[in-house]
Length: 371
Ligand SMILES: N[C@@H](CCC(=O)N[C@@H](CSC=O)C(=O)NCC(=O)O)C(=O)O
Image 1 (spheres, rainbow, N blue to C red):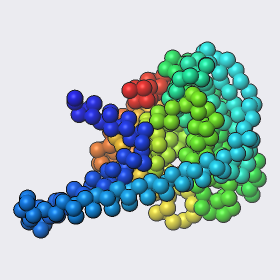
Image 2 (image 1 turned 180 degrees about the horizontal axis):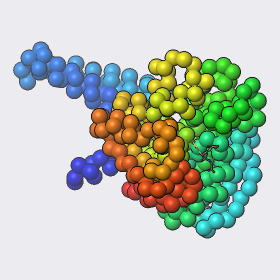
Image 3 (image 1 turned 90 degrees about the horizontal axis):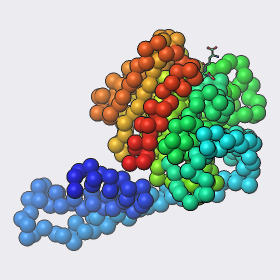
Image 4 (image 1 turned 45 degrees about the vertical axis):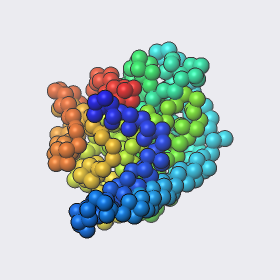
């Protein structure tokens, strides 16, 4: 059995029993720590090693690990209890490449408003007897859930690979906050997939929690007959690329694969990000770093991850330094997180570019999610 096989087995077991595995790991680490201390620090001979003490340390570690996981479990339970499943309503359903492109509406507890999301069910989902991988796709500034499903042509690839695709909207809708429609890069359609802490935005603009907790669990629950909870990936475009990267880096293991088209890679260092973060988070720049992929990757300690980045070389926002992919690549290299950056000669920021390379992104995700 090779190292790769052992890693795959570990990943499978971790996906199936995350709480148990992490408790065992904490217990093993504390036991090993005590054993090392007895041999190297206290310089005890083999026969004098107090194995009962080591076992006691392991048990403390196991239960401490378990209680930390229990806290996460209770938080998850709380989110699930808050889901307003009865508000879920089908808006439209269209057959495409053998599958169904659907749009739903639901009452969001996080955002305190009605939200739309799209879900593509590939032909393999028909019958509901097989669990399929899921990819979340996050759109960019000015978008709704419609842009990606009508312009990218992703359904061909989702059908080929047998992958479910979910697309949320880009901000709360209809909540009417003063100034929310004054510009296209802040407020409506510009939620930046973060949890605002500054008033008046903090009451509704909680797209981070909406995406990674509420919608995530709603999809697991509403489509539990076809969704495989252990095989979920995420991708996005521009502001949505930022959302995909940040969601993955902030929540290790929640998304197994991540890719992005023309992502805003270092929002604390570009005009779009500075405007949004000042408005939603206030003036404390330390708080901004929690929502910046280039900052987050430097502290990433989760499961092995490769960041797959795509960028059009003729993209005006890239040229104007709104996106800064090189900063993220440099940060990844400094901490040895694998990163791929494809620079596409002549391509701009539009869905013409996305539709050209969307197939490659599905291949990348399928390789990980279907391994
Ligand atoms: N109104 C702007 C252009 C806005 C724009 O290009 N939006 C992009 C995302 S930009 C980053 O998040 C987009 O996806 N638009 C939707 C589409 O269907 O193309 C301007 O005037 O420059």
